[in-house]
Image (cartoon, rainbow, N blue to C red; front, side, top):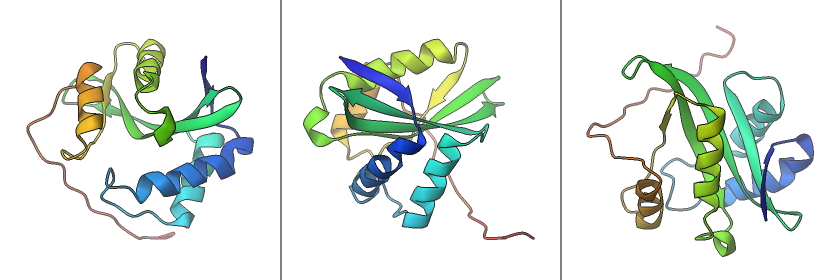
Length: 151
């Protein structure tokens, strides 16, 4: 049986190890740093209202994690839940765990829009997301990162 639990301090090292694997895979374009991994996990386990983290547990072993970022979509007029990270250790993929997690968050965040990013080449993930009701959006996203520390 799979359990979905809120990320806690005791999960930190295991989640960071999985983040290293996820961010060094072809599923992600951006290489994140150890500093970012630690900062992300700290924000998941503290009282940051914009992010929450979950771990997936099977037989008392952490087999994956997810991080959600919360915002509001003026385009859709609803709260927006961004599935920032969703990672399963390779030996636990194709067991329906992502479907279980999507169902879990849809019940928790009723009347919301769920968004995520996926590399087109990641055919396994694309297929899983389509199976769970996601559809591709026809426009690109852009970004700008600022480094204004304390200014």
